[in-house]
Amino acid sequence: MANCATNNFYARTENRTDLDKIEAFWDNVFNAYVNRQSNSVDGEFTSRWEYPEEEINKLIESLEAKDKIYIRILTHELENEYVSFRIFSQGEWNIKLQS
Image 1 (cartoon, helix red, strand yellow):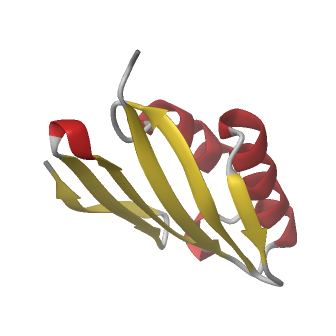
Image 2: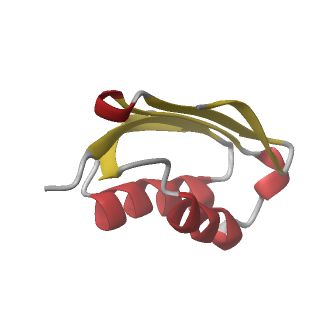
């Protein structure tokens, strides 16, 4: 069995359409636990081995207001001591930690 990475996420935006897309993405693509607030969504999902970069890039490309959204994702897979912490803000990713 493949090692599963745990991904904790948070996204905040005033754009309701983007928030709906994000909520649906987490739920449909990753079958995530999702908690929706008025202008944010957070939760947890699993991925195989590491941060799911290809899938997340597809999500970002689908958004209407990329420059007005804040997303952070903490990914960890303890068996292999893997950690990734990324923040998407003002249309760009900032990788805080990748090991």
